[in-house]
Image 1 (cartoon, rainbow, N blue to C red):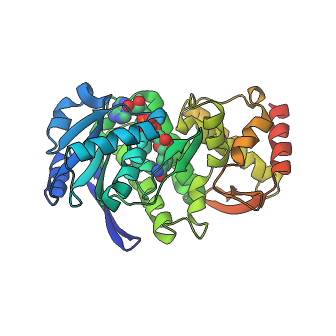
Image 2: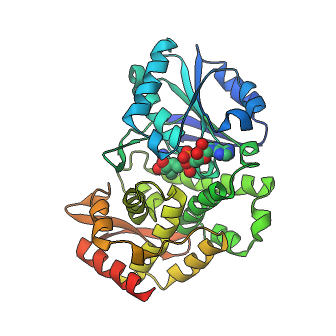
Length: 352
Ligand SMILES: NC(=O)c1ccc[n+]([C@@H]2O[C@H](COP(=O)([O-])OP(=O)(O)OC[C@H]3O[C@@H](n4cnc5c(N)ncnc54)[C@H](O)[C@@H]3O)[C@@H](O)[C@H]2O)c1
């Protein structure tokens, strides 16, 4: 087991990574006056023994992108009131990034904030979404339109949950881990391009990937917790296009697939805008190597895609602050006009 510990926004944050973390979870929960855990109903029968070993009141609920909604939030609040959750109680989740985003938001506003613990169960949630304290629900088909910054006091990335994982879910996680590598760690990117794919999914290597990604994310968020200095924007590499693709597809494309395709397009844009050499081609190779589906941009209407990008949180004075790679392991924020974006996206479409 690995334990990462950092001070983020003046508070201690612990991340446990390994298998069989039930004991550590129970020990953490002992501190609170009560514990309510929202559990993905997908996991109910798959991991019943593991889930029942956790000493908390449990509420099973449907997850997925559609659960990041006012309706689900309402259900969470109702449950908390019904269970008489106190200010000194803890809320936690056992599930993927969507349940984490939903319950994190609920924990941050219920009684103006209660204790919060994360038990992420998808690779994507373990390498990325469970770390850094951002949460959100979607609203009017706008991704993450309403949310807060609220750190879990501890996160337990138990690799046992990944053993029966759907390969598509593992691919989604690999996509966000490749993103971490591309913005901050060229050695990690090499690890993804050179290692044998089958060996990548062994428990030992998954633990390594989770730890390296968590370290990168912790370094970034501890430097800019509230996203106010644009350092944290770097984590949004691939997401300007990626979030727009998710909205465009009405969430039929997974977050990981959208981000992977977003990374290819955004690196092509960086190349066209003169900020980097042709990095997009090797990124495309890395992504296809893991079998992450490629989106045919010829099937996408550029103007409609751009209309979603106008809602990106990184838009300022009508221009988009986009994350552009300088080289592998290094990225910068560059301002770009929507007119240019349209031109570059169309050029990419025409060339494919
Ligand atoms: N807050 C952040 O910083 C941040 C960062 C990245 C992504 N996100 C968000 O994370 C979400 C995506 O997360 P996700 O990919 O985990 O999706 P998800 O939560 O929808 O989970 C995907 C599916 O996997 C199932 N599942 C969960 N654990 C499983 C397991 N162990 N085995 C088998 N099935 C399992 C779920 O029931 C669901 O159907 C998006 O909404 C995205 O916006 C947030």
